[in-house]
Amino acid sequence: MQHFLSDNHVFKLISEGISEGIIVVNKEQVIVATNSAADEMFLYDKSKLIGQPLETVIPRRYHQGHGTHVNNFVAKSKKRQMGKGRDLHGIRKNGEEFPVEVGLNPFKIDDETYVMALVIDITERKIKEKELSHWFRIFDESLNEIYVFNAQSFLFVDVNKEAQRNMGYSLEEFKTMTPYNIKPEIDRNQFLKLVAPLQNSEKAKLKFETTHQRKDGSIYPVEVHLQISAMGETKVFVAIILDITDRNNYTERLERKVEERTIQLTDALAKERELNELKTRFLSLVSHEFKTPLSSILTSITLLGKYTQTEQQDKRDKHVTTIRSKVKYLDAILNDFLSVERLDSGNTNYKLETFPLSKVINEVVYDANMLLKTGQKINYPEDIDDLIIEFDPKTLELALSNLVNNAIKYSPENATIDLKIKHVDTNIVINVIDEGIGIPLEEQKHIFNRYFRAENALLTQGTGIGLNIAKQHLENLGGTLEFSSEENKGSNFTILIPYHQ
Ligand code: ADP
Image (cartoon, rainbow, N blue to C red; front, side, top):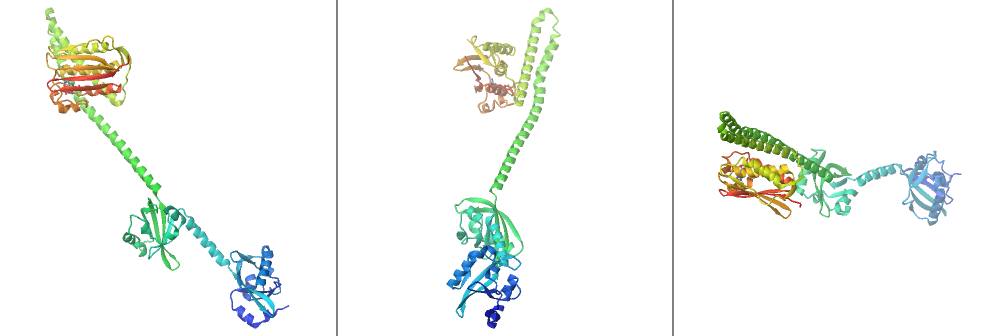
C-alpha cells in the first residue's frame, strides 16, 4: 500500500535535497515515507522501507524501550532531539549497527499524527571523537608535565593534570599565567630570546634545563622540551617538562663520590711520596749517623791492638767501653728505625706484661751509664721496689732510654740527671730531668715532629726520631709524653702510664 506522502511531490522535492536521512512514521510506528539518503544509509532499495515497522531500522536490544520512547514522544508531539546524552544506534539491512543522531519532528496532516525523524549517520564523528579523547587522555594523564601556551601572548592554553598537581595551580589559574611566571630564573625578555629560534623556525625543538617554582614557593629543577604546534588556527607552544630532581641528586652524589675518591687518591699519593722521602732520609741518616760511631769503633779497635803490655789494661778498658757505648748507640738508633717502620706500617706488636718497674729502670740506667760524659751522674729514683706495673716493657724501655740518652747527650760534663718516679692516682709518673741546653721556646711546638731537631742541638749527633716514636708508642698504650724546658737551663720530660693496683 503506497502512502500519500511517498507520492507527494513537494515532500519528495524537499526531502531529496537534504543530506540527512528522513524517515516518517505514523502513530502505529509504521514507516510511511523515506528519502533516498535514508534508504542508502540503511542499505534498502528505494522505498523498500515503506510499510515496515520502525523497529526494522532499530537494533533488537532497543526495541522495547524505543517503542515507549517514541510513543511518549508522539503523545507529547513536540519537536526535539532524540536520545540526548545516550548513544543511539540504527541497524542496516545487512545487520550492521551504526551510531546515529536523530531529530524528531511531529506533525499532523488530516488529523493524522506523524513523526518525521531526521537521521544522521555519525560513525565518522564518533571515530574522530574517540581519537580525540584518546589523545586527550595521553596528554592529560602523562606523568610528565605538559604545558600548551599561546605563541603570541604566552598565556597557558592547557596544562595537564600532572602539571596542575605538581605545581599546585588549577587550570583556571594557569590560564592567567605564562611560562616565565613559573620560571624564577627567567624573565620575559630572556624567555622571548629563548623561544625566538622556534618562532623563526630556525629550530624545530628546544631543550634546556631550568627551575620551576610551585605555588607554595618551592623550587625544583626541570628539563624543558619545547616545540611549536597549532591548535586550530592558533599557534601554540607545547612544552614537556621532566622533573630532574632525582637526576640532579644522582649527579651530585656522583660528584661527591669523585671528590671523595680524589681526596683518597691524593692522600695515597702523599703517603707514597712521604714514604719515598722517608727512604731517602733514612739512607742519608744511616750513612751519616753510622759513620761517626763506626769510625770511632774502628779507631778504638786499632788502638786496642797496640796495647800489648799487661799493665796497659786500663787503656784497653777505656777503648772497650768506648766500643761498647758506640755499639749501644748504634743499636738504639736501629731500634728507633725499626720502630718507625712498625708504626708506619701498623705492625706494632705490643705485649702487655706484669713486671716490676725497677726491672726496666735498671736496664735503662745500666745502659745509660755507658754513655755518660765525664762527671755526669744519674740520680736513681727512690721507692720503686714495690711498683709492679702492667705495660709493654719493650715500649717503656724504648721511651725511657730515649729520654735518658737525650738528657745525657744534651747536657754538659759534670751535669746531673734526675730520674723521678711517683704514683699519682691511677697513673705512674716518670720524670727525666736534666740541666742541659734546653729547647728554645719557639721550637718547642715542633719537638715531637719526626726528624725535627732544634737549632741548638744540631752540633750533637741525632736523628730527630726518638721523641716522635716514644710519644706515639706511649699514646697507643694509653700513656702520654710531655715536657717543659728552658733554653740553657734544662729540660723536664714526663712519661705518664696507666697504673692498676
Ligand atoms: P735526636 O735527639 O736524635 O735529635 P729526638 O727525637 O730524641 O732526636 O729529639 C728531638 C729534638 O728535641 C732534639 O734534636 C733536640 O733538639 C730536642 N731535645 C730532645 N731532648 C732534649 C733535651 N733533653 N734537652 C735539649 N733538647 C732536647
